[in-house]
Image (cartoon, rainbow, N blue to C red):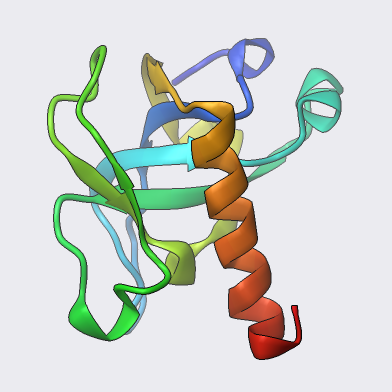
Length: 121
C-alpha cells in the first residue's frame, strides 16, 4: 500500500481493482491518478483514476490514450477512459511507476469530457 501523501497527479501506480463486477476491468494493474494535486495534498480517502491496459478494445479506440513504456511502466499501454472511477487510496500498491506528461494528461481530460458530454464539448 502507498502512503497517501505520496500521490502525484498524472502518476502511474499499481492498483488492485478486484473485485470487479460485470464488465468492469479488474485485477492488479497500472492506473493513472487524475485527482487534482490540490485535492491530493489534502489526503482524500478516494482518488479518481483511469486504468491502463496493454490492449485497446476496437469499440472504444477513439477514447483511449496511448502511453509509451517508460521508467518502471514496462509495456506500451492504453488509458481506458470508459473505466474511469474513484477508488480508495488503500487499493494502490508500491511506488510511482511513471509520471505522464502535461500533454498526455490534457488528452485524457479531453477524452473524459468527450465521454461525458459527447459532441457538445
